[in-house]
Length: 439
Image 1 (cartoon, rainbow, N blue to C red):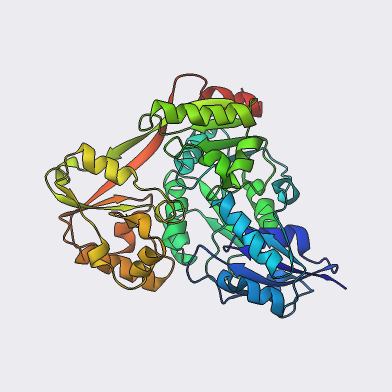
Image 2 (cartoon, rainbow, N blue to C red; image 1 turned 90 degrees about the vertical axis):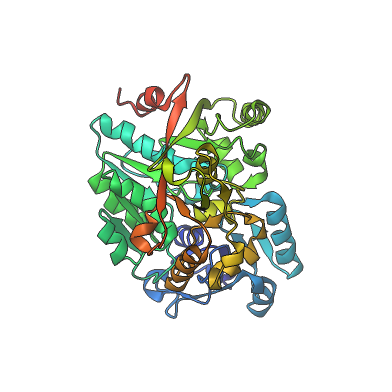
């Protein structure tokens, strides 16, 4: 009899693991997926047209809260854990639930699910969400394009809508994001690349995505999500470490695997971090990956109009996942508010409505910040109403997506943008071309 499999996911890596390990293999029967972290992605069906010939009715997706009941009801033999940015204690608790329900539990090696590309791949990953991976990814693209290379970005999956329509997605313009009905989280990741002139691919089936992407590229940049490992086998594996969360590089899954696999590790935010915390990160790198090249960097930010901050009540709207499951207590919006003399950082909690209120109930540690969550039209509308209902005099937009293009903000706004700036030697600009053989 086929081994009965359940895959625990969050609408991304879970589908990739299915495609790589279980699709069209009759010795396995994937009876269900579970979904966590992202609201509204459960109670869907992984569609038959991409699930393959063994699943004519597709595969159901259930809330992870039903995990134990599903294992018992479906007589599950093995559970595969397939999402990211969780403490190892969290992983251990999930394993206990699975084993108590009568099934085996495993986290497959990332090497089992990496696809070999025909073109060189530079993977940019991180040890935690919000470490500074996105600006490093953009910097890598810039370095390679300056060398005359055609670069295509392939982004870690965020297929939160119609999965059949999202099997392979290509983004070259802002209109492409509208066509694919992107969430705010997707826009946060795709839009900065698009504005700089890069083409971005994403979706569900990464073998098909790779086949299309490498036809347009001399070099592929894998832009990772959360702290997940790359889906393509890297020629050069770059990993971002965050000294504002020292120790997380070894205590969060699968960021620790990234740390151990990295060729180059970039320690960001060194201008904000305490020297002893930077030292902690460096000690952990030395202990677990002494062969990696270590680069130091800061995140240099710019503010569109500082005069709209000084002496005013400001509401800081920051990158959503960084504040929710990323657990960061502040972002660059707060840094800008303090630097430019804001009178008060507005607490959004008295003004929350609908699904935004639910987000704060799920992540009560967010505090006096507003995450730019927008996983559905209703949540986007609730975000707009929350911002406009607040008593802020200025709204600081510190998310990479241009929120004024997405929602109508009835208050003055200030954009905060940031890029990576290397400090000292070695630098990515010096060593990345050498590692790729394009000196």
